[in-house]
Length: 265
Ligand code: GLN
Image (cartoon, rainbow, N blue to C red):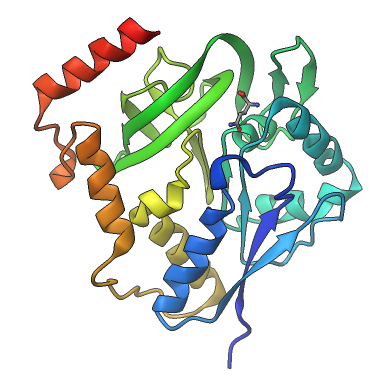
């Protein structure tokens, strides 16, 4: 029998705001439901991160925790993670982890925190925090739903590929319409939720890449009923969006929500 799939949860005490550890749990659950043995491997700080896991999940972090994490990950403790990312192991980085994988983060206290330079982006904390529900659309039309809460505003480099376009909320910076970034098999996003619980399509994309890399059957059976899909649809409806075909059907409601958000900002 094949070794169980191992999903690494990177430094959960430092990088785990808003239940982001749920991303690892949800990914493991969706794999198990399809008959694949899968386990979440906690990788506590300040231990070295081993290379050789099947996927890595990195959650959000407050500025101070983020600075501690990035210092470790830039050092010998991060060697395994850096090698895994360079080798195309699928990974998900949320919020503070999106920021720490970039070039630099100028934090809310004005400290310049160097990043791992895996992603072509820079972040500066400025203005009011970006807080609230987000709806974004991936290039294939898939809608993403999530919750954001960040002070950092991120600019992608010219060659970086956004994960999605913002339809509602702020995303990377609140003005250029980009949300997250995709760099090969590394997905980075500002969306909490946890994002893989709310977006089964994203979870299954990671699961498929992971299974293909192991040489296991890549065909994922549908989960029926799928609690992830029910949650996805419910959160989209709550934000005034329909899930079908990535179309907005309740434009007037969406415009009212936007106006209310602008009024509250
Ligand atoms: N420290 C970052 C910011 O506020 C990230 C916050 C988070 O991960 N939720 O921009």
